[in-house]
Length: 545
Image (cartoon, rainbow, N blue to C red; front, top):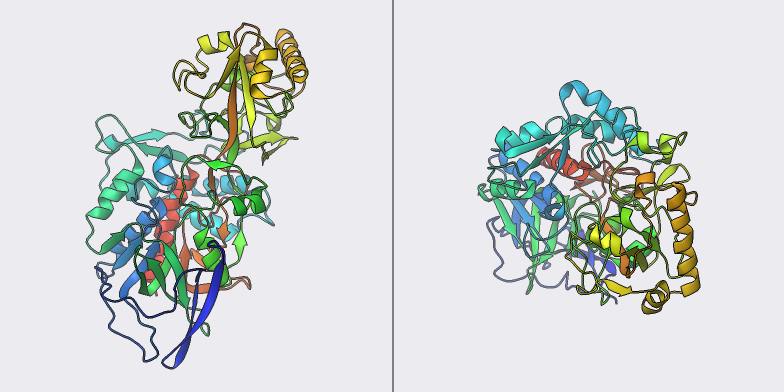
């Protein structure tokens, strides 16, 4: 049986039956591990039929990204008598998942703008019938009101934080300025001059480390959840510490904050038709939690929602990306992108951001704007995640190199292994194995657009129409890049995970990108804002048990 398959096993215990739902190939139901212990304590409560809990905690949190840390900190802060076990699949909470690799900017709003923030969330949702329900968005809008104050209550000061107003008109703040309520949220980030912290995850991990009620275990992936099949209550989980499987009883609940599935090619093929996309961050996010929760009957939503897939230069030997800047890795305004047929195939100025509306073509409506809003690109007047070829090529000339198209990476894309250069386009096409006639025709046509000041094929902004005329010519390999997926188990306004019949699965919760509220369009800073908000909501719901 393949390692990424899953299974359910029913185990008879004294007077009841338990269901163990986990990843196949794991010894989930054998004898209990010997000598397992942690700061959470041992139950000492074994059944006569062999199923025994090795550890006990009040709340088990799975995944130590920002959502998991926010949930664990909330448990410790709001119930001094509660214990929390936080398990992490990777080696470090600051080196795995997506949170540490983000910009660190988180969304918040103020009490007087809560209703407007809710309206913006609804505008981003687009489709009321298939998007996140109103009550979940209402809970989100209500809780992000407290994001900034909560961070300050935990020890941050105004001097630690940089505030980005919702009217900043800065890259993706707001991301969709054409929407009526786009200015209803503001954004905050650590990294102000003189601050001890340069990222919200570093701050939150310092807070966590000062709370003795929280036990953090790394390199301990969840392998199963244990459920009472009669009441559907999740009783605890099983994780691997590398040598044994440890069964931990969770008295108040399990909070799943284990991210997305962007590093699972099969799931990416099924939900996005992008099996070859490469994640820029979370190598550990392989959808383990999705498969485990599915075995408990969890419904899923937003499985085709996420941040991707814009093209980013990658080394010819497939060994790594160019340096990631948050807006791509090269200035795509200084060249064009072609596919393996030598043709342009989309609006290939795909920087993350908006343009100066006054400089755009006269009469073009705002919903035909261009750029890449976290991977969403304008297509037919709407914003979509466009499927991308496995490999494409960025073409430019020496003038583009001189103007800094590669400046973020170094001085020479050829010397650094990202592409080729040649004195003629014919030679360039041969090196990249492209049809020379098609590439030459494409470049000639592009140059005519630049001369006329208008791109009738894909309507790139006039200030991005850069001709390709000055030899030598350069070509760099690109591949589609993924930041994160947002799909996963359906979540209620109380952060409960919902089953296929529409009922909460007792004592099972989620936060962050694991079944995110972002169902269609995404606002930058929203994922981290959600991690903080729903991390708190999930923890409070568990503590109420």
